[in-house]
Amino acid sequence: MGRVSRGVLFLWLAAVPLAGGQGSEGTALSLSLDKAVERAVEQSLSLQISEIDLLSAQREAANLWAQFLPSLSVGGGVSYSTSLLSQSRAAAQSDPLSYSLNFSASLRLNERLFTTMKQSKLLYQSRLFSYEQARQQIEIQTARSYYSLLAEGANLSILEEVLRLAELELEKNRISFENGYVGQLAYLQSQLSAESAKLSLRRARTAYEAGLGEFLVLLGLEQDIGVELTGEMAVTALDADAEALIQEYLPKRPDVVIQRQRIAQAENTQTQTFLSSRGPSISLSASYAGAYSRTMTDNLTGSIDVTIPLDGWVPLSLKDQALSSARAELEKARLELRNIENTARAGIRSLAANLRNSWAGIEIARLRVEIAERTYELTEIGFQNGTVELLALEDARNNMAEARQQLLSDELAYKTMTLDLAAALNADWRALSGGVVP
Image 1 (cartoon, rainbow, N blue to C red):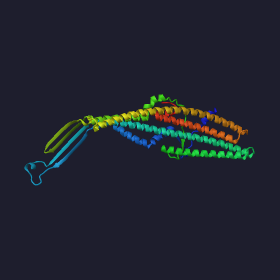
Image 2 (image 1 turned 120 degrees about the vertical axis):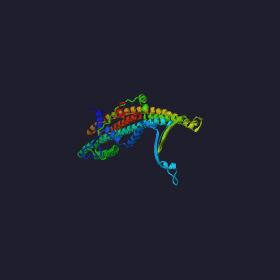
Image 3 (image 1 turned 30 degrees about the vertical axis):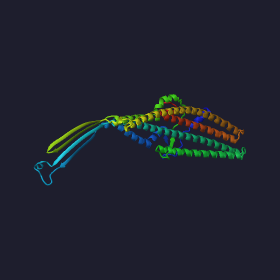
Image 4 (image 1 turned 180 degrees about the horizontal axis):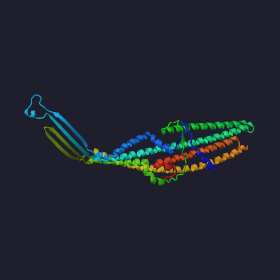
């Protein structure tokens, strides 16, 4: 196996078994990326609130028939009537108790009836998209944090390897110093290098455990639970054709979709304003009343009223100005959509270009790792033969560690950039981060 392959394998096969501690039974909880994302979605309080709003909007949109339900009322009463001081013959023969019953129904068919129905549908569509978008953002953010932890864990493996090499050199120098082959200064320098490597590893492990603890809290897990991240940060080149992505995904971008929904709402508002200021309204009403006092009497009435506003047709009247304002808001929303689309095109092109540049940086970083590993091997041989000083060997070791860390950083940046592209396109982040344009 070549040196480059060994270097990359060293980075990514060093899975991340590091965690805050072991469970009560001494076993760690295996946490894959899919499980982490699933738990993050389940534990998100903001997403639960959005789901409640979505269900409310769905219930309203699914029962538009309720808009046609007239106002209904029913009533009844009992009354008692008699003379206080005198009593006529007719009053004596009548029943002092009387009973009444009435029922009424009314429906006003105006501009708000149909525009409110459309507004309910638009509200449901808007909240549905907002819910899906919020869910995707949580998933992408969780994936970004998960990959960051994988990278930090791989960096710990690099630092552990640096410490191992430093301790080996320290042991060799100790033996050589005791036998008089190296001076005291070289021996002390190797001690300093080993202690510095320990400190770097300790700091990195502390930062990793703190980040892991915060990540577990977001997933609804205890910080002291033993966790093993079982995923891998496999980085694959993504052939991102900016123009093809724009044509395919521009209409699906969150900001574009949201603005189109605003345009639809503005159109509905304009229609409602027009009908309110210039359109007729129809009112339907019916009522029934019945009374009983020895004899039964009842009455049934019904009416249809049509109202046509006239002031809305007067130029520069308040209603005419309101209609002009609604038209202006609609035009502004359409212009804003054009601006958002232009900005989105530029953003997608920039992300695609940055991805290409980032991949070129990864290839250079991999070549640098190969050179650094080979340089360290040759320097170590020279040090053992006495032709290379200790400082040169330490520089070669540090350069090798820095090259591996730079490769790790570049690959993490590339992975994060693919997630950013998925968020910008509103595309499947799992497929996109795997090097496939869905």
